[in-house]
Length: 326
Ligand code: CNA
Image (cartoon, rainbow, N blue to C red; front, side):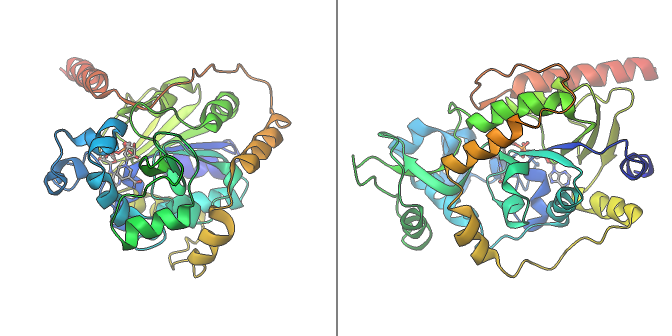
């Protein structure tokens, strides 16, 4: 922890790349997927699913939309859940000009609600601020979609083709946003350090990021979900507690009170974040290529589970560790 604080303080870590997942939002009361006992995958009986991933499967949604609609009603950003100390820590990184980019797998919009600027944030698995029909793909009025899901607890219907509408959350088998691919390619060679926070690294292609970077990585997680290379750090335990300790070492005060203008943000900044704006942000980035390191190719990959491979890798790491111990 002291070592990381030192790297930030002495300017060696001034372009910080962050990869985060559901574990940074459990402190807000949102269950993650895979934590045994508390994770959504262990508590899906109420949705009556044939297999856990079905809740994020387009074909299943087309047949039985109720499970996702019910989850979306609980999760809809800006209603119940508020950003955690970890989200506010990331906001401070942005304010201090230390944040290269956040790649979040979360769909809860808490990075956005914490005030992290659009250009510093890639919501790899989408968000609830826009929505579209799963059949004709035409955009829908998201305020109306929100009302239908949150208040009426019904499935929103497309006004053009009568197909089902869903918020622009990336389901399994769907492509990640174009920004993910274009920005990642530029960010990988620029990063001084990668913070991997609260993710099991089991969903590709986001889970591949730690293997792409050449810089050192710091894992903030309850579990050791990746190989710790020489120079890497593993800050095991609760993300918020570790981030609070780090902030205190750095002399940074984390904002803990909730933002009083969440509603304003939703209306004034969120829904408006349209394709055109994103293109402009990406264009700005083009002019800011940094010290031209090697560009990493990222193919146009879709969201998939890589559970088996990661498990095998973890087992392999464990074996190697055991062998070196014994
Ligand atoms: P995951 O597979 O559930 O993994 C979460 C990881 O975080 C696990 O390794 C946990 O041990 C760890 N963890 C949980 N709580 C803490 C904590 N307080 N401190 C430190 N570590 C903790 O979730 P991933 O994000 O890796 O999987 C990607 C999926 C999850 C994406 O497709 C998301 O859309 C999806 N998801 C998102 C949310 C959300 O938006 N908040 C919630 C649940 C699932």
